[in-house]
Length: 249
Image (cartoon, rainbow, N blue to C red):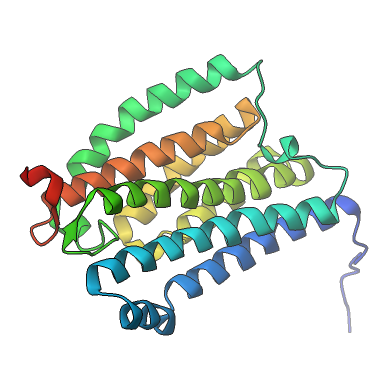
């Protein structure tokens, strides 16, 4: 039988790329199944009244995203590859790209905020947003919603644009790293529907390129927060069954 010779030797570059990919896979998968656990959700609704249970459960899922997609994958990479620093994974304050980051963060935010505002009012978006399905929101729910999105998206962007992107760009090359990143990033949006899945591809491409050019994750993080906050608060404003009590005063 004729076989193709295969070199199974695993060098340090291949090990780093494989570890980063598995960190993304394990981190997102664990977060996803925790956030969708019927048993965990039932525990919150058994312990608390409906509106409070909605708020606490969603904040729990956001915190799990921060932990499993951000902190634990980062710590895994730092432990296994001690020569790499926090700055290597995009957690730095580079002065040489500060103006670049500010300009692109502002420019992209000006572009995506109106788009998010108009799309968030559509009935198909209101099916999923705002994620906290409390009937009556008070100021605490309002601010917890904002905080939850911020910490979740920090973990999310740290995983995709930090832990995953920089090691793959170094070991596999820029465009293979971007292609893998976009594929995984878009795939995570599949449960949210076709529109978000398709929209994730061009946004993912832009965020990957800007992340590599700036050397850190801050453009991706801040733009993503602006997008999520706009979508969430617009959905809150226009959802027929959810009310923010402060607006009534």
